[in-house]
Length: 375
Image 1: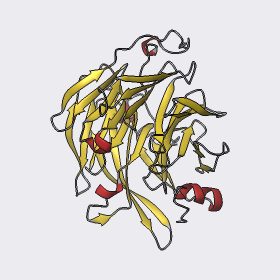
Image 2: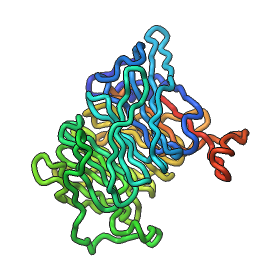
Image 3: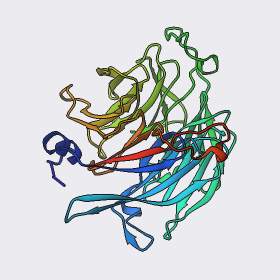
């Protein structure tokens, strides 16, 4: 791989100058893939007796999470994806996945109203550990607390509430969700009634804060409990009028907050002043964004077009890199490894000519989705 300077993730340099390489793995999920995440490198370097450069976890419509090993050959620059274990046990689709730092665990959030905790064994098998129950609805957000290790617990969000769980005991520590109505925030007539109070669709953790994107176009910022009471409302940012905020992420060690509206807008907020510094508009619906490389100011965004675009949060407004698979499909998730050398994405099912899965899904025959990796 090509190396850039310390301030610029290598995938950006490679994509802009030389053209990033691409590898994909078909049929990873029976239906849509909703989320993906790279596991922190230091804990996952060796499983199944073989070295992996990265570990990647996905989740999707068929109610399962899946683990993949990423292996890079330094001699020829070829990257391969290898299927590993699967996390099964949810009764409905799994919409969120998040990996803990240095513990070998990952958590999944499901439409069945539960968050499940899993560990990856040295054999490559996935072991079920704890299930967090009691959410009022779908679990659309997960964040590991204690610098991402889970030492201070696990945060989740469901409907209008945020929850903090004791990871080791599997018990609820505290929850919050009471807030005053904001008369200044308008609600779209197209928003379903059950989502109008401010339904929480995402959760990002950074700088002692939890940033949740909501159905009413507001990004609500809560305390993570480190410097003030967990769930205390810090600020409400009505930055996406009349659009559901489907994704949030922090960049630049928490200095920048990226929020993605389903109307195709991306807003960059400076968290030191809670001021909007940039607004990026796409010609197609956007669904997800992620920080590219740990601590960088770069972020990647994806959506219905199937194209991955990376930008600097505080720099030039023009895209620094555009990545596209040979047969693009609408994308629902994007993730970067810690070094910023790889971007993974997945989404809608890839149309198939076969009638597979008919017996498993009765009348529903979802097309299997594909995992794409750019490096």
